[in-house]
Length: 372
Image 1 (spheres, helix red, strand yellow):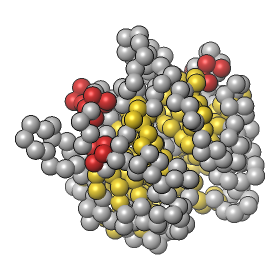
Image 2 (cartoon, helix red, strand yellow; image 1 turned 30 degrees about the horizontal axis):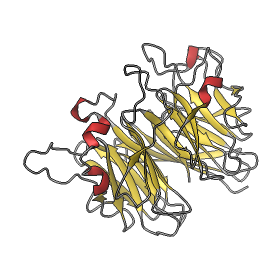
Image 3 (tube, helix red, strand yellow; image 1 turned 180 degrees about the vertical axis):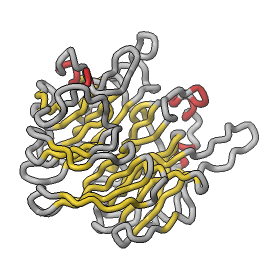
Image 4 (cartoon, helix red, strand yellow; image 1 turned 135 degrees about the vertical axis):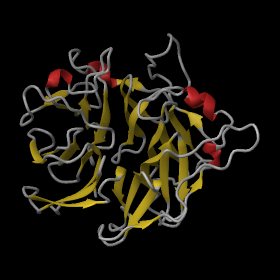
């Protein structure tokens, strides 16, 4: 087993956590960019070295930073993501923060995608130095209709996230918008169509809605790119292409837990296995662990059944949760799982979720936790 490197983005900066080859000992380094909001912190899987960071500061505003020396030095994008200037009669839109970063297709070195708040999609073809809006979305005449426009009431601001590039075809893209829903393009972003059939929208009057949904996290399974999973504001779902109808597999979760949460993580080799971290999504939406008892739930049969995995977690009075980018898996055997909490703790399991231990405490609120 190779050592594992975890990239940690927080409310007040970024840290890097490295393991030994047994995944028993971990060493924390940092902080990087102390005081800045780091919404997403990722490594380029194509070269295994370049780091990108989506940050927001009081004096620089929203930007993207790059490092080619393991985080020792950082260079700001010369042209960060920004919406086109509004023409007469158009609504003025400005990027509040860059929320999501995704490396492009393996065959497109230097290509990156960024999702922003409010909902916008941007692309870089020079390694993250300059960013251009994907006009097929950002200038789409129906974008305000899809998202709710200025009436969007998403807490912490509306977001475009879960940007997915099909590993078989660089022109096939997916993303999630909160609010808006899941969308698909088959022409590298020139045109888009909603992909929300079968997904409940409990916060709206009864009916079938083509758009306006609130996906929290969407993943394309690495072992089977035709299978997508999502953790939604209204449950857990699976989609098997070429079907365009999602199936609510969260109905099989324990009723006293429910199927509301932010992250969903895929097994690197088994398309039937994913993990979720449920939170309390009852009427007042406290966004904490259910009953103050943290637990991960795993399915190994594509959502037909779920198993609670809580050994090592506090048994009571632990009132935190895990954000959508703050849970990830390595490619070990058995699989290692890692999650960062809103209380600044990092937890790890090196046996596919059966047992958990806390690696780090007392960091700022964790926004993202990615395996490099």
